[in-house]
Image (tube, rainbow, N blue to C red):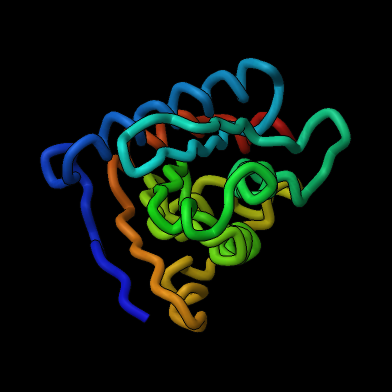
Amino acid sequence: MKTIGAEANTADELPGEDARFLRLTFAVARRSLASGSHPFAAILVDADGAVLMEQENGYLPERDMTAHAERVLMSRASRAYDPPFLSRCTIYSSAEPCAMCAGAVYWAGVGRVVYALSESRLRLLTGDHPENPTLDLPCREVFATGQRKVEVLGPALEDEAEQIHRDVWSRSR
């Protein structure tokens, strides 16, 4: 299993439109935060650069701990598109997909992941917050156990991504 892009922290280091799409996830994450939910988001982009779907965190209103933006987006995408199509798509995520979300990306068949905030850096922000007991397992390790290639680029634009989370986890205990 091949993964790419161990580190990329500036927009200049990101290929093509990747920085623009990551920043779009930041806008969706801010919208999620403004609606009272956790500040996470993901978007699905096809091979031609068209945004197919976007997803805010789905924790509220049901307090569904499994309704991470990436997992919900992959459920929607796998119902709408077949795996050969999704293999040419990219999921952009405001934070690194956790093990559950990486599994959803893998099973949906998406071929490329670009993420901003790493799980390890997110863990430093959330601490032991009961609504986000961060599972610090890099998505690259999850994908490496699979039978098909998933390209990974990230972390990228981490400082920008972290700003969205500033003070969120300490004030919402």
